[in-house]
Length: 217
Ligand SMILES: [Zn+2]
Image (cartoon, rainbow, N blue to C red; front, side, top):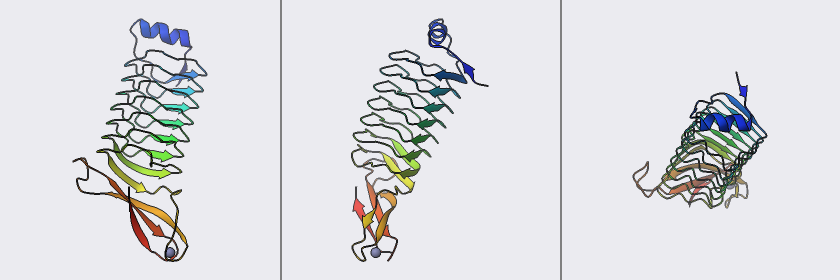
């Protein structure tokens, strides 16, 4: 059962020391610069909210549904977004150091220039994301699939990168037959799985003739 809450009630209860806001419905609210550090908003639903330059560090957003919200410049460090669905969400310029996005679904969202240092995206799904300038230093990117997403501009220093299903927009023209080749997997150079210098090699395979090759990432 999701309970509706208005902005002033949320702020008032938080300032009184309450932290338990599980299963809350927060709709079309301007929460710019709000401080909800350590609040439990698990299983909550956010629709059309503007929560820019806010402090959401350590917030529990497990199993939340976040739709058409703007978090530009917000601090989500240490926040738990496991099993969370983010759809049409703007996370650009956010700070998400050590945040947890296990099994999360990130769809049609803007993550540009966000700092995800040491964040955990294990078993997450990426679809149609803008990732230019994202900092994934020491991130766990053992993700399930990536589609319509370019990781080219991202910082991946010491990240664990393991994409189980390829990003389908990364087509190439096969040099052997001119057919469509596709991204068929990502592996690592030396020091794989967390021991440093994890740089991904990206493999492509041709649909038509089976020719395959590696492009160093
Ligand atoms: Zn071919």
